[in-house]
Image 1: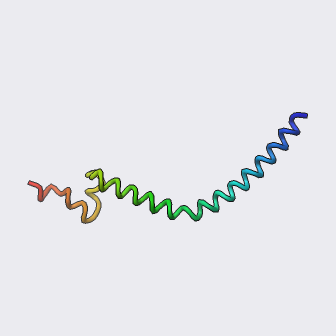
Image 2: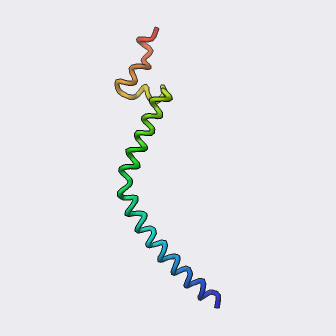
Image 3: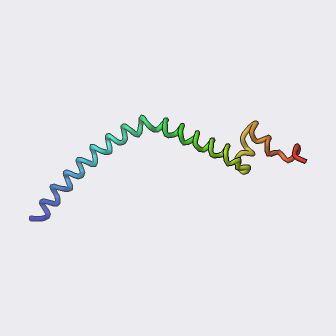
Length: 72
């Protein structure tokens, strides 16, 4: 019957998915620090080049550039 064939296919897909999820989690565990560093660096470079005052004003030393006291 058809339902037995479908059950067999579901078992095969389930085993493949479990194998893939173990592999993916192992890779993700090793790549997480790298992805985090690249993400932070990308955001920092983006803020630097766009000169977004809303957020850059709160960065120590760099935020002095946006102080209204010295800009007359």
